[in-house]
Image (cartoon, rainbow, N blue to C red):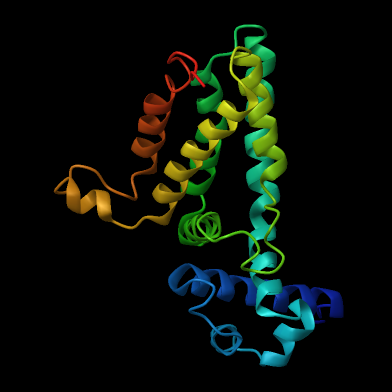
Amino acid sequence: MKVSRRSNPERREQSREKILDAAESLFAQGGFNGVSLKDIARAADVDTSLLHYYFVTKAGLFAAVLERRSEDVNRVRSQSMSDYAAAAGDQLTIRGLLQAYLQPTFDFIRSGGPSLQNYLVIIAQMNSTPAGQIAGTDVSPFDPVVQEFIRLLARARPDRSEAELYWFYHMLSGAIGLSWAQTGRIDQLSGGQCRSDDFEAICNQMVSVFANGLDRPAMVR
């Protein structure tokens, strides 16, 4: 029987994915500064030189980890918002937009197991890291979809200034990052009534809390 052999490109891709899997897990546990290339190479069972070959630096590897799943996350978010906007027409609501923006991402993550949850933790880390501190991450791969969300918010609330809409997203992003970091703080505070890994409840509560966030009177300057 003839044994099928993998081509060189296939072997390279498998090796690259193995490194990215190991890096994703370790970055989620220790953060960018708490993990070395040697740690990642050891976990992936490859020589450190291979990491330099594929990614050049640790920052390059971190950026590749962020980029790898961003296309999938962006796709489900963008499609959901597009579908909602088409169905709602001129009747866009903040609640509807929040549901369209948040729900597919939480559903996607819940279906992906520990690997995708590690990815969420890394995004949370990135969102709380000062811009420019990690080379190559000053521009987030999620920015285009965030801007799409802001544009739809402006359609729903044309009476709000652009600055107010960005502040609204800033506050929402903070809640998302804290939830995705899964610190366990809410578990302790609530005596177990709330769980930091209960993404369904988190999504529902986030929509509920932020739905009226732009219904207050406009800011007086």
